[in-house]
Length: 182
Image (cartoon, rainbow, N blue to C red):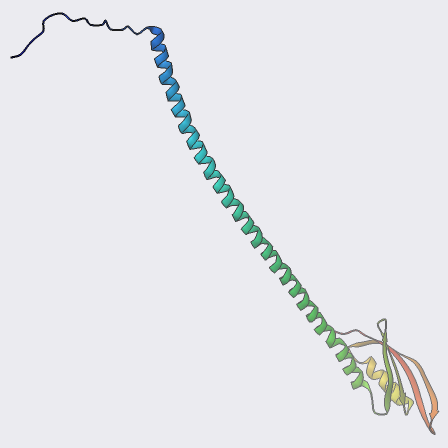
């Protein structure tokens, strides 16, 4: 059998929430929301800071690498410049080598039979030649041959004298000329 109690029971009356309590609950919910939002914002900012620091570190490493490459490029450019200067010096030496060889060749071609050159010197651009000849005509022919050369200029006979040497009369001469080259 089922028993049903029909007697009235004592119930506690429902509590009334006051305006102050409502405001306190609302402030608590808002404070909790702001705290959770601030915490989330702090976490996202920390992640962003970490990412930016990693990016900065990567950029710093890349800059250091590029500076090393730039130093290597500068070193290569300096070496290239040095090699180019050395090549230019070698080329200039080769060009300068041809001048004295050509000058000596011109002088040797101009020497007629009967002439012996005794000294050859270059002093401040002037070439001084001393020599001996059997006749004065040989000396004149030598001077004319030197004057006709396109590589020689300002050929001057400075001195020509007759002097006896071991019973033979020899003409001693001194010449001065300049090499102009072409």
